[in-house]
Length: 212
Image 1 (tube, one colour):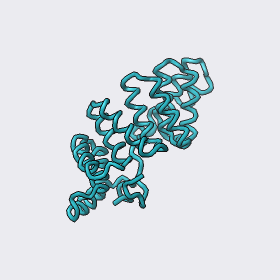
Image 2 (spheres, one colour):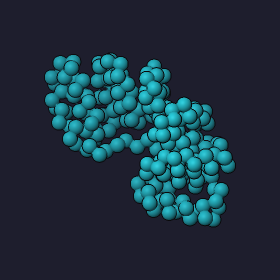
Image 3 (cartoon, rainbow, N blue to C red):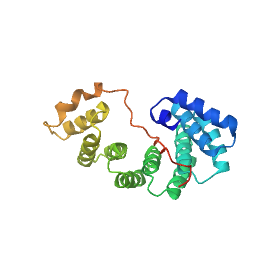
Image 4 (cartoon, rainbow, N blue to C red):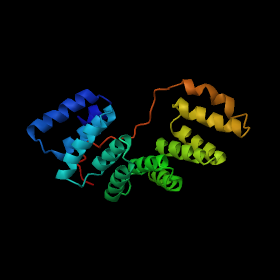
């Protein structure tokens, strides 16, 4: 089930998680994984219900708190989302994805300094985590710190050169800064890989038991 989930075969993974829950309806790990999966499918309300059930049985699950935070953010419940991300990083202080997700929520609330701190923490913990650099760049762009954003976007592209949207954003900043070397080479990249998204749900390790 974990391998299928990580590979994006959500329907098959859900079927196997449900099979586990038929045997043990209180299986905290299966509940948390099914909850995260439902959120990935867009059913955030159902995700919160499943994750609450999981956490009622075992609150030592950083991945479950992270997944619940994502679902709550999508449900426009940012204060609760921030609380969940806080629980996740308290349980797992090296949880880069949770720091990044908390940064996303803080950015939505225009709490930019706090968001930047979380993105930088995520990037320090996981130097190959492109999403942390990408969202840091977006936040710097929100603050009109174009030179800083340009450098951060370059780091994100060095890690993951595929997302066209990212390279297009870099080109627009370069144009504003009159950098005519960087700009046009990536200007049309907005049409490349438009459906690509960097996942916000970390794939649980195969031997993870639900505890830190």
